[in-house]
Length: 450
Image (cartoon, rainbow, N blue to C red; front, side, top):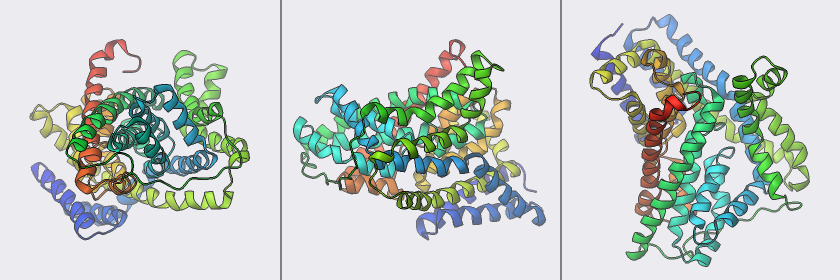
């Protein structure tokens, strides 16, 4: 087998080949990841009879951790959207912040909504608020677009039960409840800096150059119809139900392990069970508000889940080959010799994959598969290492990312404007998130679980 610095050569070559297949040849990410995983295993020198098992086990172990969660999460998001709960939450948060700070309100709305709802769907739904807000406030629409899109991608990349962060938590061996709590704290700060402040900054400069107009450039999305109006309280309850159950498990295990409540929450607070319970509650409680047929909703959820499951599993297969080859161990050793701190290393790895492949989930799966097994040897908090990895997945979304085009289309921006508002806004948020990881690292002696 190949060892030493040749492993780095193989690793870099594997990444370049992956970029080439996806970006240049436009091959599907699933096929590309599986193909590169098999080829990398051959080049490294694994016994031919073992290669298929390594790839399949990597694929399977990843889906064992998050497969059920992905399916249930998409179904849950469908029910929240179809019932009008998402829009209610958005309007309530905007009412709290008022007109002048409405970009901050819509940014934090995105941060909340993107916890259970995938980025693309959430942006399309909430972008309908931008036109009226821009007209009322006379704030250029790009500021709202930036705040909303950054708020959504920050939660998508950092807050469980979104699949990417969940995979990172699994691969790093992090406590899920603590990961959620600290992830939300970091997400809020990153949204404020990268979404609100940067959004206001870039909006004023674009307007001054005549690059965008107020409001009338923003497309109006089709309005959904509902059987009746859902209450704000019920909307927030449904959004928070799976998070309450998961965090409840962490809290009871910390303060009353082995007790009745500790035992109960160890079951209902398991990530899969918590989301299953939330889906069942949504099916029952939200029925009076939903005008869509359940068959249609479930079919849409299954269609969305299929591609995500395949790409997620394939990323795990590629990561498994990387781990088995020893490339991760050698890279860690080399980087430690360069005096690069592990959190910065994690951020850089994920950021490179995010920008190149256009998939936050693939970047998170791959980086956490490489660095996750090193947690014990490195002697760092698995939660903080995982959050540093997640921070790298936030920014530098480029035209090879479907999210780039969603923001471009529904934000009614040109490609250069989208790069300035969305790609760079996300990068600012990602750097902010990394900075917050270091703040928590310094405060670790006085913070629980770190």
